[in-house]
Length: 425
Image (tube, rainbow, N blue to C red; front, side, top):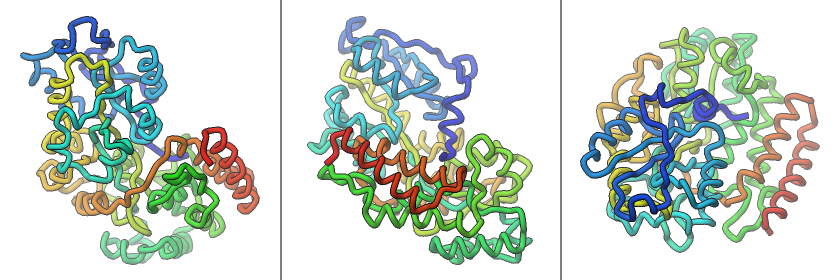
């Protein structure tokens, strides 16, 4: 299972009292105060936005509209989908998780085209690959980028030093430039420091390698390609640390205990830094960050959208443009490690300072270039469902000792069946 600060926060009891915000759904149907309404509602989940910035937005726009904020716990996608289908109590502004965007695009008619409200004029401020993922084939833009998840290699500099390995981020990146180089480094670590592991689980490696490519499981012609070389390579790469004995084979439930002791490195997105800091505060100053083996990928990141029932689209667009301005994006990173989709934020003071948890390292010097180099890939609406059997099969190798080749065949077979049921060729 992939570790995610978003998942931890989503399952936490995130309440209005904790955030200092008002939780209310409002009507959202347009009947309460017309299309130039003075009452607007915003739905998001814990950790999706800076609570401080959102609270200031309520004051900033208070003379024109009353913005009521709802922090939605549980399965956000399910609740939003149900509400949109019902057509009542629909929020005027809503978050959409990056991994869910592909499944909303076929129903883009339920959202307003942000290009009609001014997004074209500001789109150049945001990473093109991220913006494109929320755009329909005919050019309708339904999502305004909140954040992204550029990936990197987190590593324990103290353990590297103890093992006689380089500790400087540039030198570690050079020594772990490819996946095979990285695994060789892990073998050296394990030899010098018995009881330590390079990888938390092999599913995390698979996710990263798939994300480094330009193709996933379904192509733009809606054909299943989960049996092709690029996925097979990702599978083989993921299994490699297992066969080398570098895999800790842990899941979310055991990760917190392992991160401060037996894990020497972590593959993760920028926001994963907060996971590590919260789980292992006693390791402050011992971690560093460098470029990920094989190049960057993206993991996570979300959007704000305006449902078609939005009661005041022009004012709502002003609000989300302000919340997601580069200046406020930089504040979001400082507040809650929400990594901006606006590159202009990367040079702002809120992002350029040294991070004490990482020994004073200026981590933006790693994540900034990674963000700009993430490859653009097509993600079909059924992509997540088709990927699931591969993840389950990799977990079965670790938990049940299944032969990797047998697990591969089962994963491909199940994925192909799911693809057919989803209408994929």
